[in-house]
Each structure stands twice: as C-alpha cells, then as structure tokens.
Image (cartoon, rainbow, N blue to C red; front, side, top):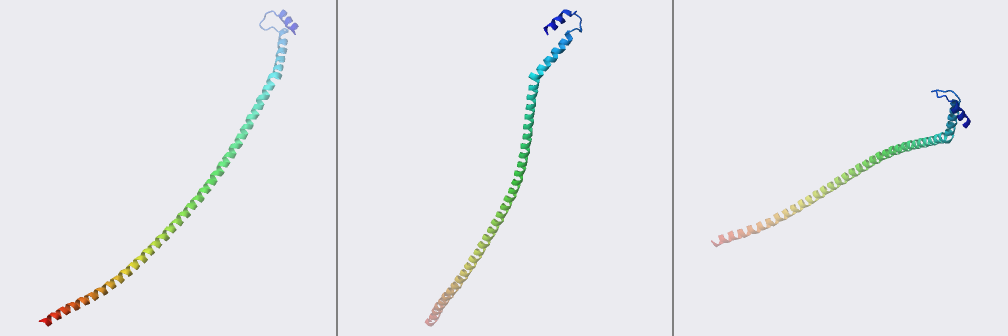
Length: 158
C-alpha cells in the first residue's frame, strides 16, 4: 500500500484533478475506513440507539397502560363515591324523618299531658269553688241567724 502512495506521489504532475493511481487508492482507503468504522462504531452505536428506543417505547406503552388503569380506577371510585353519597343522603333523610316523627309524638304527648293537667286543675278549682260556696252559705246562714237574733232580740227589748 505504501508503494502505491509513493507511486502516486512520483507521478503527480500537480494538476487540479489528476486521475492517476491516487484516485483508486483513495477510494479503497475510504471504503476500508468506512467498513472499519461501520463494524467498530456504527453498528454497536446503532444497536444501542435501537435498544434505547425500544426501551423508551416499552416504557411509554407501560405508562399509557398505567394511565388507562388509573383513569378506570378513578372513574370506578367516582361512581362508588356517588353511590355512597346517595346512600348517605338516604340515611340522613330517614334520620330526619324519624327525628321529626319523634318530635311530633313528644309534642302531642306533652299537649295531652297539658290538657290532662288543665282538666285536673279545672276539676280541682270547681271542687274548691263548690266547697267555698258551701262554706260561704254556711257562714251566711250563721250570720243571718245572728242578725236575726239581734234584730229579734232588740225588738223584744223595746
């Protein structure tokens, strides 16, 4: 190979484009260098790039799958949350109606107790009134007798 280079150097006349033995020698060197670079650098580098691209694509696919699963789970939880809210609203409504029923019953019971107490008090007042009238009649009778006795007693004196 060095003979070719020396031969090419001796035959060079100095033109801009000399087509002597240098051109095929340069072409062979270029092809040899391209083959060596391809074997040593480009193929391993291409394989590493392809491996990395495959890894990245796999990770992207896995991330998409996980995202879809997360969205499905979130929708499921939202649905369950809606159902739980409905149930809690139903329970709250039931509790409120039961509380209202209890309050109504207690108010009615209290009203009945008040009416009973009023009636009892009214009866007691009526009994006391009758007793007071009876007592008053007795006193009026006694006073009337005393007055009569004094009036009659005065007439006898005159």
